[in-house]
Image 1 (tube, rainbow, N blue to C red):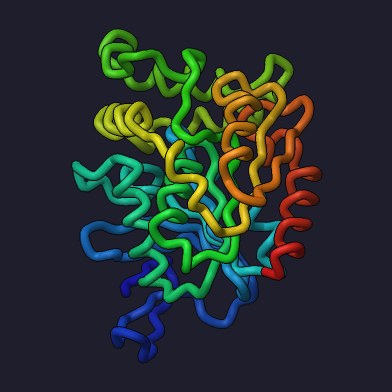
Image 2: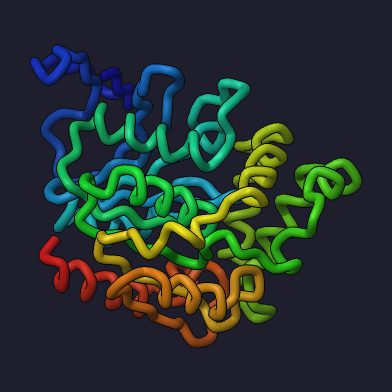
Length: 290
């Protein structure tokens, strides 16, 4: 495994006698690292130590979505947020921009970081990636958190029947912008919205086009009854892209799952109502003994 963080090198023997480049001798400070997973490299934010919490962003966000979340959890956990391939500071290899590949990349990331059983939280498309990972590799998880997502059901508010045509007609930047601004209620803090908009240039037309195709094809409706990992579902009452009814459908399908509705929040409750987000996630982590 190769990790670059802009700090001095340290060498250690490990599972593959890998070389690790990291910042030595600091406390739970957050670092941006690049991890070689074989076929490509992924950029991660990595903070703290202890049992791992891994956070996965959606189609029009990056790991920066979780920076404050990592700050909150780093004193007690190893908190990691990943840039999926094609997004943020991760490599853009020109292929593999789909949910199945993102889940496979996560498995390789778990391998390279030698992570013990983790709690995996995905928001929006990250929730679909999390479902795919949990269904394929549930033995690697102590818990699953599905935020602002669905079993593949979509609304026209999120995507119409031909997202490729929309990208051709409007351009990938405008489509990305619309997905971000449409995720928030009208009274959302403009600073929060603008922070997400500022990250659009970190992906590109191929990435968003192929991701939207993958979203249109995603469907776990016949599989979720087999998800045995403890699962928390979160949704905002004002999320019109992936509304409460879609989370209720997941809740009904996943055995012993727990559903929490954030009153007044849109698609990104971790930004809009962080106090309640932390309280609910803390309670879930305590409940499952993670």
